[in-house]
Amino acid sequence: SAWPAGPPESKVGDFAGAFAAAPVQFDATYTTPDQTHAMMEPHASTAAWKGDQLTVWTSNQMIAWSVGDMAKTLGIPKKNVRLVSPFIGGGFGGKLFVRADAVLAALGARMVKRPVKVALQRPLMINNTTHRPATIQRIRIGATRDGRITAIAHEGWNGNLPDGSAETAVNQTRLLYAGANRLTTTRLAVLDLPEGNALRAPGEAPGMMALEIAMDEMAEKLGMDPVEFRIVNDTQVDPEKPGRPFSQRQLVQCLRTGAERFGWNKRNARPGQVREGQWLVGMGVAAGFRNNLLTKSGARVRLDNRGIVTVETDMTDIGTGSYTIIAQTAAEMMGVSLSKVFVRLGDSNFPVSAGSGGQWGANNSTSGVYAACVKLREAVAKKAGMPAGEAVFADGTIRAGERVVPLAEVAGTEGLAAEDSIEYGDLDKKYQQSTFAAHFVEVAVDAHTGETRVRRMLAVCAAGRILNPTSARSQVIGAMTMGVGAALMEELAVDKRRGFFVNHDLAGYEVPV
Image (cartoon, rainbow, N blue to C red; front, side, top):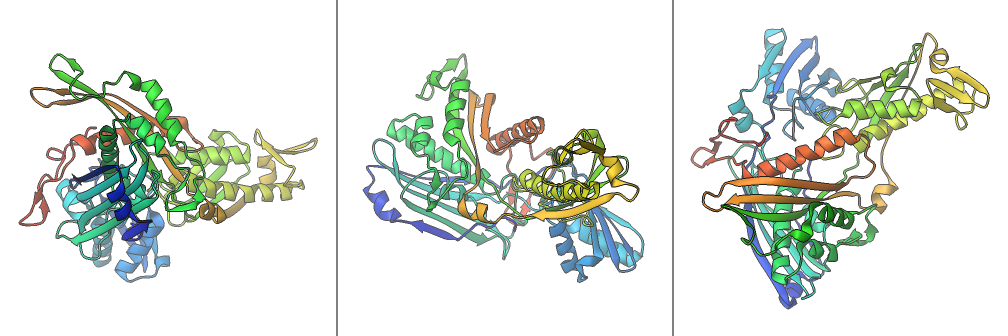
């Protein structure tokens, strides 16, 4: 799995003693169901052999991973595998790894000595790829009467195939709130169901659901406002490693800004007291959290005699706007307009980048492009006879002092190219890097039928430097929508006799899009 759950058990202090001694105690167990990615585009691949060289055209989020998996599965060297995936029609974690369509296409093409295409029908997608496994989660919180957490425990159980991975549902509890005495455990049972793996923020999605409900219920027990309860227990350092501060942590600002904009002060804390005819109306709040995973990323950048900059990297675009932000990065670095940048993605012949998954795409892939552009700038300056440290790249030119030369002229007929990568060292060791948010929702429930209507939603997010506000906003809206689906609609029904998901199409598995 791409999602290490960390140690199966993590302890800080004496949880049992602190919980037993806590003036206010809370203990509850929550469950989440099996869920599926339900992307619009099916898993499909076309494979062709040329001698011992295999090319697979597919839809895949992580190019380098999948090249390795194909090579290992087929028993051939990695250098003999080329994987091409310039566009992805939805992935959500379901296309992180090589699946049956790619392997079968490659085997079939080798047998019949001609290109072969394999596409999975919708029922095969749900029962023959990965899904988010069901979880059982127990959360215990001990606090002082003024609401300061003294003990917190989060235990998670899920099932998977033999040697499968645990759902990382307890990971955010290791980092999100203060508390001197802590316990998190992850347990895995062997179940004969399709493989469980990454789906739409693996771990945090089901884990935050349980943790944030527990925080709400504890706030009610304490007689505290749920927003204030979270703020009181904010921490600016890793609770398990107090010597490691967060690089930036703006959860409190997200909560306060969101509460003000949403009109949280108008909330009636007593359930069932706000009615509009037959509708019961209530407000809810939850924190958002996701770790920033850092990985080595590279790119190749070329400059030609037309002044066009071409970027090549095996980064992928699953609809998040990778093409756009990579073009922006190269345009800014080389001092050219966006119309002068051409981006090529998703080909294993290109330098290895981060790939799309785990919220690591933008910061890692654009950093690799930045590094390659720095190297290209140095090559341009050297050829132009200008000191790299003083050269200014703007309006398609390089300038130093009074001398200005068009980039196209410097590139010449042969052009210039540079390749480089970037990886993180001390920054990742010294600081805990995470992204935070506050979500506010107004919901109406029909008192007679139980029909639920989500009337208003607000997300306030602190995600560092936003490279493209338009695409970032779209991602947040998409995530909010998927959160509604996970909470209210999405559930795989299990045939326990056969280890089979029964509602294996978009008629039976409902998504709110």
